[in-house]
Image 1 (tube, one colour):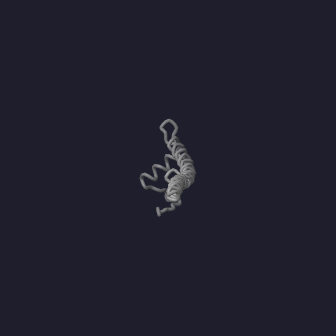
Image 2 (image 1 turned 30 degrees about the vertical axis):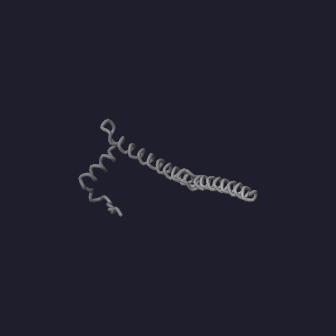
Image 3 (image 1 turned 45 degrees about the horizontal axis):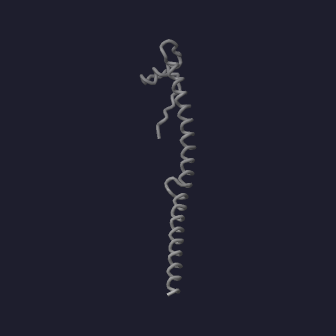
Length: 105
């Protein structure tokens, strides 16, 4: 009878430790590979770097566009810019102009 009680208490303790280890292992694995784990954090950091560089590029592109638009304002029109836009929109070219057609790929 004494040996059965010892065996039962030993198995109960073993089961509790096993369950505790399984729960800790589950949360440990999820902390590393889960949706909000360490790997996900590294991927988010890489995405932040990529999007930041794209933002810088887009800001530069916007600044260039705003500069070109400012040259076409009615209060201060740049004659060269006006000539360039008029030729582009109307499809005209001066016979002495060198024209290079670049096709989009």
